[in-house]
Image 1 (spheres, rainbow, N blue to C red):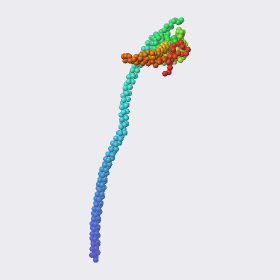
Image 2 (image 1 turned 180 degrees about the vertical axis):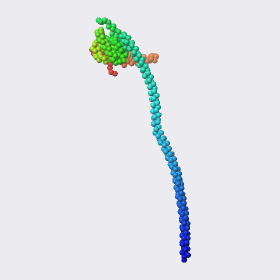
Image 3 (image 1 turned 90 degrees about the vertical axis):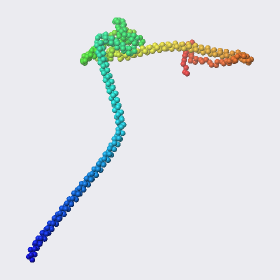
Image 4 (image 1 turned 30 degrees about the vertical axis):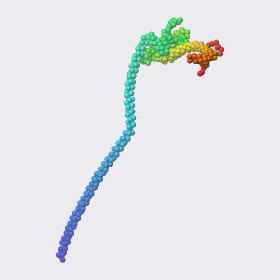
Length: 416
């Protein structure tokens, strides 16, 4: 029994040890299985991962190919659309391009023309400057020449006056006389020009006004001295008006207008004087002096020339009337002669008809009896004489007015 008790724990220990061993072995197997399962799980997971990566790679590769195809198609579509749009745009812009080309050609032509015009304008400006310089030089020379004395100014004024008269159509020594001398109670007087007017009248023109003060004003550079020179010029013109009025040229000619013309060779001379003395012209007219310039004198002389033409036409009309009267008388005499010739022709026709009647009735009847007797007349038959039936056309436009039987016939016109 005791041995069983002793052996039992050993057996229990052995059993526990065997169970423990079995447990350890089972645990090892379980662990091995678990490790194998874990390894298989890891392998499956890795396979899944690799499969996913492979699928992703394949999907990415397929997507890239599709994308490349799509991009290629899109590029081709865009290229074709771009070419089509470019063609359409070129077709739409072609008229604009042609218009721009024409506009460019026109602009080029205009630019060329402008350049030529500019060159011509520059040349004309240069010529104008040259002419202006020459004019200034000539004006300066004229100013110096006029300052040499009153004689030079007088001759220049007379020449200007002669030019105006000739430009107006008047002829020297026919329509006007220069330096005409006359004797008066105050001595010999010599106006510059005497213009003959229609009807026997004359117009006296004087051109001896001094211009020294005006020339001085033109050469002054400051306002004060220039204005003083203009004032002296105005005073000189007024004094010359008084001198002309005192000469009383209108009393020396029987049919002269009750005035004398004072000629200034330029409008500027008169304007400068009137600007300083506004009552200059009215005072001059009060003193029977008319201040004229080339402009106003030209108009006045044109009126004189027109008067001469009217007078010549009137003289010509008188001659035409006289010639008409003489021609009318001669036509009246010739008409009377023509009327006499007509009456004579009418009388001759009547006499001829009487002669033909007498010849036909008294002579030809007896002569035709020779034909009845078969007398050889050598083939010459007696002609049949016809009287003249047409009458002489009378002169129907010759009429004698009542109460003028003794006067020559008068030619009158008749309608038709």
